[in-house]
Picture 1 (tube, each protein chain N blue to C red):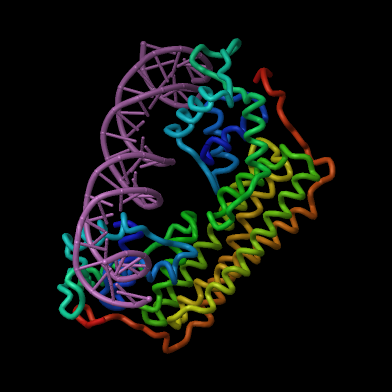
Picture 2 (cartoon, each protein chain N blue to C red; picture 1 turned 180 degrees about the vertical axis):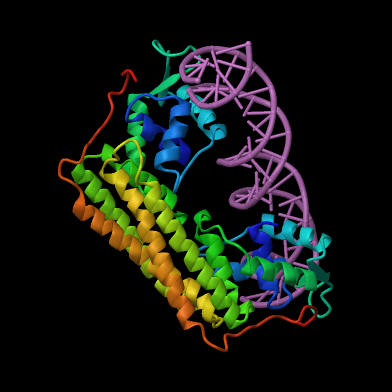
Amino acid sequence: MKMTDYAILGFLARGPKSGYDIKRLMAVSTSHFYEASYGSIYPSLERMARSGLVEAGRPEGSSRLRRSYSITEEGMKAFLGWLAGPLDIAKGPAQLLLRIFFMGSLESAEAGRVLERFAKSAADRRSWLETATEGLPEEPDFFQAATARFGLGYYAFLETWLEGLRGEIPAKAAKKRAETKGGRR
Amino acid sequence: MKMTDYAILGFLARGPKSGYDIKRLMAVSTSHFYEASYGSIYPSLERMARSGLVEAGRPEGSSRLRRSYSITEEGMKAFLGWLAGPLDIAKGPAQLLLRIFFMGSLESAEAGRVLERFAKSAADRRSWLETATEGLPEEPDFFQAATARFGLGYYAFLETWLEGLRGEIPAKAAKKRAETKGGRR
DNA sequence: TTATTCATGTAATTTGTTACATGATTCT
DNA sequence: AGAATCATGTAACAAATTACATGAATAA
């Protein structure tokens, strides 16, 4: 399971969609930090259909060509597990943001706990960088030192942002989970 | 030419090195934002040797196995061109930081102008995001809106950081360029 | 009827990582 | 001598992008 798979499950968790739909949705909503091409979306859908995480539905009303996928119980379980699971914050903001993007699928209380863990990760990474860059053999020049300091600033920003977000979660945060199957569009 | 090539040229611009050296240097200095594997370093060196950007030197004093590469005039030109050339800031911080890491190879005045352009890019991207996320069809939920706002905060942070850096460039910033050829280690 | 957009899918290519193979050199 | 590490290189694998092929549905 790769990030694309979870991203797709995340969109399907809000209701059945075609590969084409998913591509378009990504373009207008997540494209600043993550986007997938047809060349990964379609194969991913097929793979997940084979392993039972999604189900291909025949498209009653619409065109014969179009095929709509819905998420299964199992797919929902995998998705929610990923959403609340461990995160390697050093691997870039894409995974972090993707998970936050879909965090409306969790209850407010749980989303809060997850965000708290993320903030902790950022803080940990920050203090790790701090000590890691101390005992280096060579004295870095001005610009090299600057790139080391960038990390500290970035993770500090991240932590602040995450804590701020956690504090603002609306109590009744639209915990929209989709009906696991069916539903026209 | 990919980023790895320029990163390697950047290290060689400070003096001749082996592939092994470059790997070790990356591990201790740039690994927080960029690192390459042997599987890309060695092929890159060979490619650049074929196209005349680097020269494989025979390793007089050291072991027969070890092979040391030095940057050529042409390689230096390509490297400096990349260093001061256009940057797509939306493609993530790795390229930005890598270029700043090597910015000691430029004169202070020029480094200042380059940083100014980078800051401008960050500001432009920020205002682009601002207007881009306005006129969307669907109303995003709380978390989706949050990921959109993240971008604004991030680029604001980046701009501030870059402007701060520009203001602090030491006048006599070690414009260390290597002798184009030779030099023992 | 023609162009555009909807819609799916795949083949070629790119790019890189991981793991392994190989052997030289240095340290104990 | 044996272990560790220096040092180079490549084959297998992984993952994804780009471009293309195909054709249905819709708007002009």
